[in-house]
Length: 132
Image 1 (cartoon, rainbow, N blue to C red):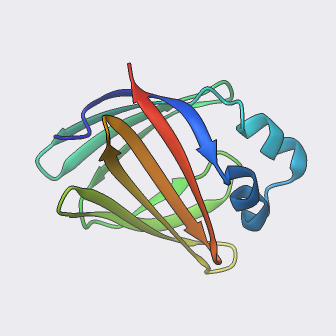
Image 2: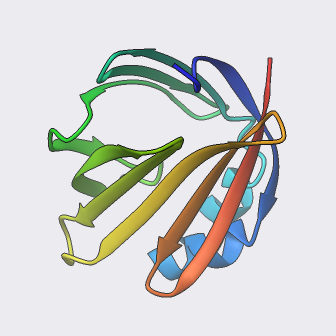
């Protein structure tokens, strides 16, 4: 329940390079850097309900820890994978459906901020969110 609440993106670290590695074109990358993403997280036991809301889309995601599910990234990339809890860290491992390459992501609370970290093909990035 640590992650419960509404979080708004505050800043990015290496996000453009990460998106470039993912194959996102420059126009979409520039727009994504200023998407005003807001994430609302509600956790009840192993169940998560997440609402992502940005300048470009609103999406509801429901998942259970350890149970595989399909998800469409903001650029339309289709992935399948799972989220797991490891201590206070929420870890996701997702496989792209178009090329079978793996995207890993984590969510952690650091100094009262939600830090979402990404890795794809050797490129790391972070998005840091402040609680609303």
